[in-house]
Image 1 (cartoon, rainbow, N blue to C red):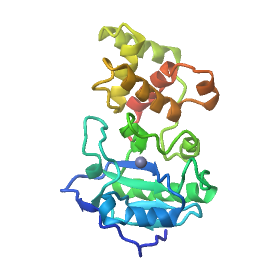
Image 2 (tube, helix red, strand yellow):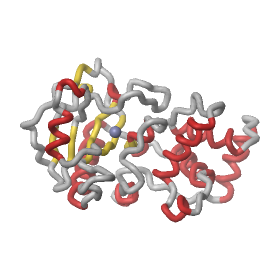
Image 3 (cartoon, protein in one colour):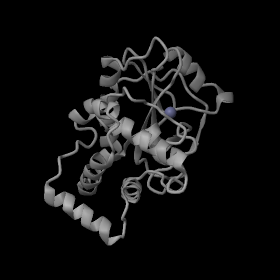
Image 4 (cartoon, helix red, strand yellow):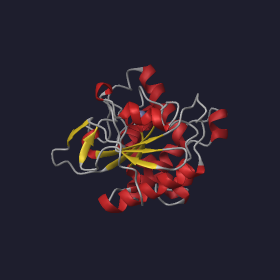
Length: 248
Ligand SMILES: [Zn+2]
């Protein structure tokens, strides 16, 4: 796979021996890939990503994998807050309000090839390909509700969730009851927390809770279920069970 390496971002530092465990997907919200390159490579901006993929599917490598690029900001996943140290950041040349407001086939094909390569190289788990909105649900929406997660799961890059048998649902429910999780809200928070989300403040803060639910909903619910305002509960239980059974 070929990358364009002639643009380099100065915005990085050392990973201090942290292992690469996550891939974080972003969108730039800028006009085009040239604007994105100039933004991500400007010292004063203090942001960067390892890769940028253009609408034409060209992959720019702006920071070497072994360095810590600055893309995640204030974030949290599975008890870890320094996400930049353990992740690779991929920016997509996409702006929901711009002319580049489509995830082009060429872009997504390049993204898939890049993810596959990184997964094999760093032994990254299928549960560890994340949206910026997964690790920073209270302030970030990217890569947004039109990002084709389905295409990534069809290509087996991320977990595709198997439907649960009744006995499996019962196991989870029993387990919740053993922990005296007697309301749906408590169960939802516990499940999100086990998967990796930041639930530290959400039980008491309704605003944060609804932001977290909304981030989850956008990524995991079908669009018709979002329109119907369906609860995330069943999807989340299925997700939790599949998550616990996935090791690779
Ligand atoms: Zn982002």
